[in-house]
Length: 304
Image (cartoon, rainbow, N blue to C red; front, side, top):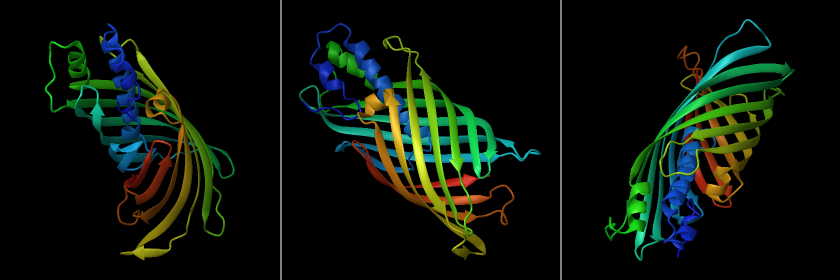
């Protein structure tokens, strides 16, 4: 029997098919897994792209559009900011042998995030950010099988209920970070560390868990160059960076990994002279490596 990458408990559950709590346990596994996908859909942890989760049969495609705006302040010590994102992802796992046939699970997630906070200049070239956000997501799942599910079979009925469903998730995020970013001969090296805490409320009659909680910690180092050239008179800067991302809580259990690494380059095109509302347009290319997560990806971003 194949062990699912994103749903590692499915194989164990199928061995206890006669258990009256099977549907409850299956629903709990689904909620944790769908919520994990939500994090990657709504957070600027990894860029838009395609990822393999454990093996070539398990893939995650993400599309992520982040936005951030820092408000001007009369104080040199602090300023407020707002951020948000729109995200879409599709998780697909093939060749799942649970019923004597090679089945497939598709989970699509649509996420909308809105948040904000305060940025404080606590020391020279050192700032700290504290904030929070609300994330609403719609999760559509589909269990595909060449053998039709039998409504009279309790296992098939549970699979149909859990994996052929639409669900809403309400997630609350708390966030804090600290960064050091001096300027040396027009180059801007930096190091930053942040931690995010997520709590997702669950409203499901079969789930025995009421919510899921996870934390994501990230250490990032990099450097931003002075303008290396111009495009249509607009300055182009390069950013080179590396990150170590650490997972804890339900996300760690669902992905069966506790960390991954990101190595990337970002192209920053200054557009302040072209548009008073958009100061920077960026294009990012990065490589992700971890025990159960591999990808080569790209992403776009805007600063307002």
